[in-house]
Length: 243
Image 1 (cartoon, one colour):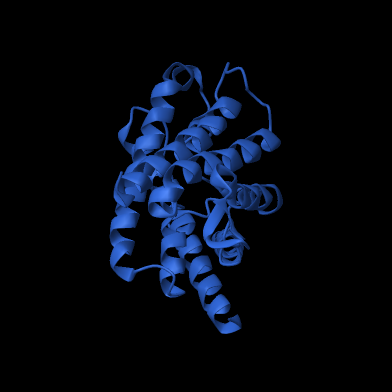
Image 2 (image 1 turned 90 degrees about the vertical axis):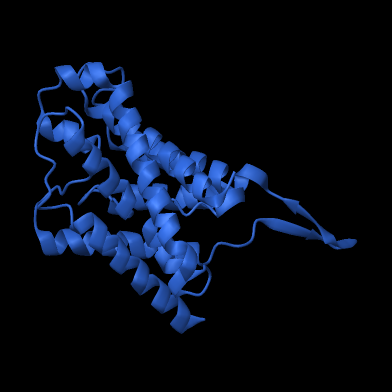
């Protein structure tokens, strides 16, 4: 598996499970209907765990253009790879959104609430105030990227053999899982915490393409793209200033 394919598959799994839980909670007559915010934030965090577990060993599991940009600004990732990573993340996000629609097709058909159906693809504000919404996405993504810079290497050097290391395997994906869960629980209530341009834009494009009734709300779409990029830039610059 190449890093490009790993980013596609990891992001696809992220969106399939992340937007999948939204569909399970908001679409009519699902088993999880109205199960609430705790279910959504928990499953989104676990979706991150799944995506990072699969893609991590191959690509580093960015799964997010804002993360790729932030790491590049901080000198921790090659600028030459940023465009291909973003393309892969967009392909993965769009693929995952298609699978969410396919999986829940019958429930989309009987759900009258067009806003609920859009929520299964992309984010939206609880109170529509563009500047406040933008600040929410900037702060949420700042926390995501800034904390990622401080994740420790999940490997342990053995003192009797410095060249041998004991890794934590898939448990190494746990820190970012807990981080995304914390962001969702604490900072997600205003905008739905996109904190990832591909996570919002890719599925929103699929909402516009697929036979799902309702507006794709393109007037809002710039916020969950611009906000995460700005948050990542601020996080990278602050990390560099503190290092």
